[in-house]
Length: 319
Image (cartoon, rainbow, N blue to C red; front, top):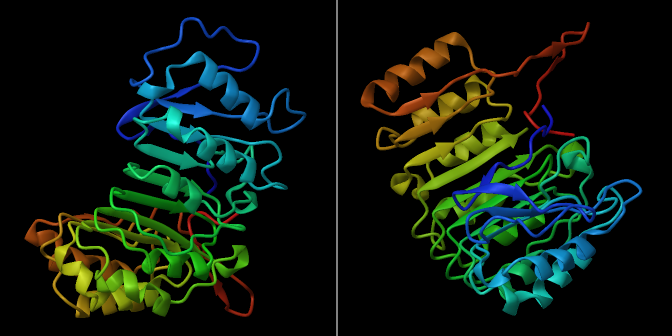
């Protein structure tokens, strides 16, 4: 599966794409009614992202903007968003109401997720201490050194492969308000070199006292993740546990069921899996009968088998 659709909402606001350089900007919607997507050209760009952002700042009352979506910047497959980060940091005083920011909202026609170049995005969180939601798409070159942020409630990192350094950086960060954490761990083929041990600071919950929704998904090591989650202290206070989109087999699911009870959850999401019917039935009997919503949609999790019997299984989003 690839990313075929742009974000349709952010911060519970519908997304609205700021018009291009040749369009009218005298009939724009109210600044606080939408999450504004700002994009530059990708190929043979008429304007780059920073020029589009400058036009946006001139056309919109930025003091009322609550959510921004950074779309494509020119040649994202070949250049990182350092200029984007610099522009947003420099403009921080113009956005006192900004509460949500997503960097890298690109679909496959603009840039495959594994090709999106990223950089250190933590200066954005430092510049906007009131941010409540922050998200990023693309793991190549992404850095996330440990930080403190007292307002952040939702953190999302979408990648075909999330670097171990980033996973460890998230785990070492102090995020006392964080309620929703979503990490697409990915595959080593696209830079996802973390191990289950790297998740321990997250799974301990020590720095995440308000966490209620934990997604550790899209992982080639989903069985090891499930086994680690089975005894993780943070699980007892979760409402949603999401281990979907990865290479989850009977081994990982059995380890998960052998661990602590999951019947307190509101939802257990395991869609895109490689589970036998017998194991799926066991999950339903164990947790679904206790009122937990369970997603066991196999989705497009198809296996390939070589002539020598080798079986290949895939994460939902790689390239």
